[in-house]
Amino acid sequence: MQVLRALKIPQLWIMAGADSVAPSGPSIARLEELQQELEPIDIAVFPDTDHRIVEFKIMPDCRRQKTRAADGYFPLQVDWIKGRLSPPYGRAQLMPALSR
Image (tube, rainbow, N blue to C red; front, side, top):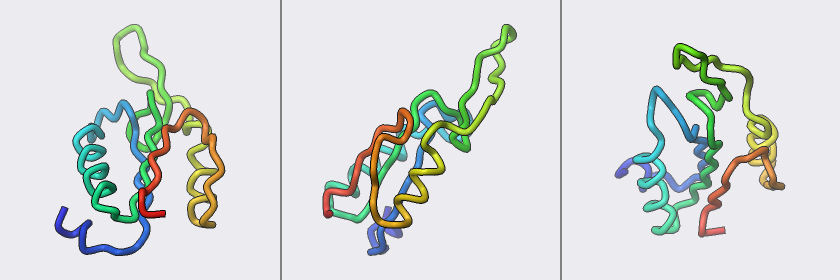
């Protein structure tokens, strides 16, 4: 958190809503705390995606079979870099920085 507070550059954090490698809940809570402090942090959460923002289906043996990148994942990044968000980005839930 100390490092993120020291950064004064805009940041985009894209999180998988069902990440099996790095659960996103605690990170999102910390990022929202930083947003309340008016840090320039935008957050996008893609529900029902796993690590790397990929959709998946549950197989009969309960394994996740990854299927494809989530709709809107790549356009979100391009638009953010260009400085003009234009949702929707698939089913992503956007939480823009409060300091804009």
